[in-house]
Length: 294
Length: 337
Image (cartoon, rainbow over all chains, first blue to last red; front, side, top):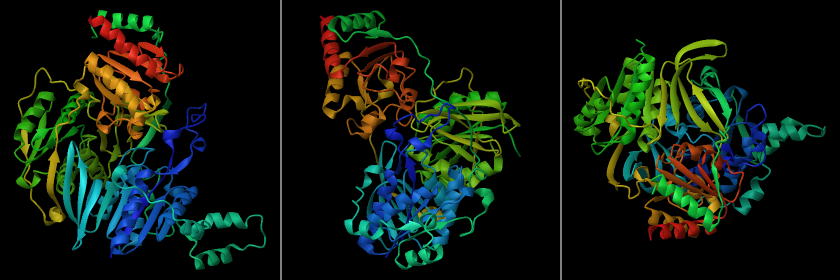
C-alpha cells in the first residue's frame, strides 16, 4: 500500500489567449484568461491513481491558489482522488516559487504519512519547473524530476525512467520520494460519470457561504455539517489551519520580485513586401543570392 | 562575508562540458566586470580537471573543482550538498545555471536550501542600480524573461536577499573566449560521500548525439501552428533540403505534434542565429522571437498580414504556405540551372 500526495495547479490558459489580455495600463487582465487544470499536474494525478490501482493506498490532491481553484479539485475527485485540499489565504498571494514550495511543503507535512509526492514538471503560466524540487528540498526527501515511466515499485524502492539532456536514465530510489512528471508520460483518465454525479456538488466553505447569501433558510454551520457528512466538503486550509511562518509566505516570503512588466511593443521595422507570385518570389531569390545568403 | 562574486555551475555530461556553461561564463565575465567582482566556476564530476582548466578560456578568475568517483553521475543530493556548502560559505552575489534538465533539477534545490531568489529561463541578464518601492539598491541583477504567454516581458529582481540565482537556456548567451585568459587557479574541494547520497542510484544512462543541430545550421525553415498539419511540414523539409537548411518549429507546432521537440526554436527551445530564418505560419509570439530574432535575415510567410512576425522580418510574404513554398522551391531550382 502506498499513499500519494499530488500537487496540482490551476493556470491561465496562456496557449489559448482570446480577447484583449493586456489592459491599457500594461498589466495583465487575468479575467480574460480562462483558468484550466495544468495538464502535467493531471498526468501527475494519473500516476498517483495508477499507484493506487496497483498497490492500494490513498490519493490526496492539494492546490494552492485563489478560492476558484476548487474547480480543479472537483476534477481531481472526478478522476478518482480520495481527498482534496484547497490551500488558500490572502497571506499566500503573490508567492514566488520559494514561498509557494514553503507553504506546500508545510501542507504535505501536515497531511503526513505519504510515500510519494507527485507533481507536474512545470506549470504553463511560468514554466519554471522549480516548485517540485523546492518542495522536495523542504521535505528533506529525494526528487526524481522529468519522470517518464515508473518501471517498478518493490521493497519500498522505485525504479523510474527519466529524461536527461540528450537521452534517458534509469534511477532507483528509496521512498518517500517526490516525482515530477512529463506530459507525455501518461494519458490522464477521463472523468468517471459515476464520480461526476457523486462529486459535482462538492463545495468549499466559501462556496457554501455563497449559497447561504440571500437564502435565509440556509445556515452555514448546518450546511457544512451536512456536506461533511455526505463527503462533499472540500476543505480549505488557511494560515490558521496548519503551522506556517507567515514571514515566509506570499509576497513577503518571496525573494524574487517583479520590478517591471512591459507589454511587448514591436519596433515596427520596415520589411520588404514580397508578392506571393512567381515574379515576386523570383525577385526575392535574386536578392538573397546577391546578399550571399544562398 | 558578502561580496560581488559571480558564479557559474559548469555542467558536464560523462566528462564533456555543456556548451551552455561556457556561454554563461562569457556572460558571467561581463556581469562580474560590471559588479566589480570575480568570476568563479564550479566544476563537479569525476576526472573533470580538464573542464576546470578550460573554464579559464572564458574569463574565469578561480575555479572550484570537486572531483570524486561518486560524482561521476549527476545526482541531486550530493551535487546539491556541495553547492549549498560552497555557497553558504562564500555567499556569491550571483549564481548562474544552464536551464538544462540537470540545471533545472539542481538550481531550485540549491535555491531552496540557501533561500535564494531564482528566476528560470532568463533571456537577458544585466546589472543595474534599481529603485524599488522607494528604496535604492546598488548593482542588482536584472533577470529578464517573457511571461504570461509572451504578452509581457518581466524584469525580475531579488532586492532583499543577497544571493541572486538564474537559469538560462543553451544558445541564449554567446560564447566568447577571452583575449587574455588568466593562469588557471583551481581550488580543489574535498568531497565526503554520505549515506544519504545512496537513497538514489543511477542504474543506467543512455545518450545520443542529437541528429539535429539547429544552432549550426546556416539556414532554418521554421513552421508554426498556422501550417495546419504534419503533412504540410513536408513542404518545409523539401525547401530546406534543396536550399541546404534545417527544419524547425515553434512551440505551438511542437505541442500540436507537427514536429519533434528537438527542433523547437524559442525561449523554451533552442536559440538560433542563422544567416536566414524563414518563418512559415508562425505568428511570432515573444517566446518564439526570443529564439530567432538575431537571425541575419528573416523571411515571414503568413496568411495574416497583421501577424507580429512581420514586424521583425526583413521580407514579408502574405500568402498561404502551401502555395508559396512550392513556388520558392521552383524559383530556387531555376536559379541553379
